[in-house]
Image (cartoon, rainbow over all chains, first blue to last red; front, side):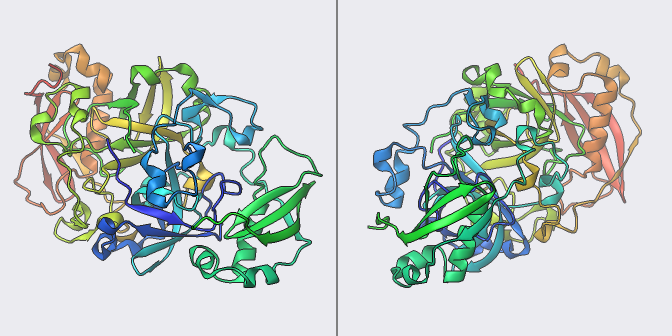
Length: 259
Length: 259
């Protein structure tokens, strides 16, 4: 089957680091789903406002060769999507510390025979012909192939057994600010703000949420190590000590994604 | 993106009529997922037995031109998959009686820009390198593109608002037998039994479940009208009167699907 891109996801996650490992209903992070011209038809959304949640089927577009990443315009980014992807029967889930192998079909790893992602998201509102959703675990610019309503009577299994993912599902870190960001935010160009946060409070809330989920690779636990999170045009530098994230610095992102 | 078929679904649903409209956890109907040679690798399933439910992402292969349907071998069936599919911004869901139009992204209709299906199924067991699942709403021979573990903490939204699908979710019919089937079942060729039911009791249980879900097109309610359900090599003739299905006759299926 040949899939056509029906829409692209736009949000503040311009870098893979910090993207939630799964979609989460509690996430405050908003993603705008922008339909491609052929599918940007108001009638195609008729009745969708009756649903609280939607499914997105999307492509792991970061599985690309480095040269085609980020600097290329969105459509160009996904054109050669398939070529560099290989599959391996086993993968090393970050949840297990990155050193234990599981079968690829027992994981949500991007490195699968068909690099499709699946996320349930909360439908917040419709703006123009865009869908605004929260809870998505998608990179900015991710191609979307299908959108379906979430049906609780067939899709919800509250007591499902979660295999190896079970034990770490509720792990959260505290977040402490040792940096102030007001001066940086006020200098941001307008186009960053339209794809992600619309206020300082919203940006701060989103960053706190991302960091509370512990974006570090699972096998790293060095209290002196500095990490950098890019979110919505701003780079956050932080440490993790015990169960606390300490934000040391914030600054305007160095690379310009939208040239 | 070009999708590769990783597996095919095998079950008793050799005809579209009678397939559940959505996957259902309560369904007793078993589906065997048979991997294609390249993906038939035991390591790829390592750890999957820890999960009670799986996601299947699959192709609506019945959206094909009639000539290529059913009589062709499985692989041939899906080769020209894409060509006859068109999309329309609105569809008429059977749930709404088939005469009200909803936006395609507010439905699970097969007639979508990318004809992908999504089903959560219960993992019953692994046999050889096949997965045996229940609750699938898939036709026999459906191509499968991805299998993922179901994660309750990201995928389950017990209180999701189900839009127009809400009100009819729990509707069920009673089933009454006016026909006996033992003589027919004993004459069935062995290959029918391996793809679906393994005993008379199992076949009967499956058929009762299918009929209780009311497989009639939503807009039909004629108590004199005879319907035919093909399941696992046997054709069941029935009427629906008030809230009761009356099974009038059973016989060996006329067409041979496996020639």
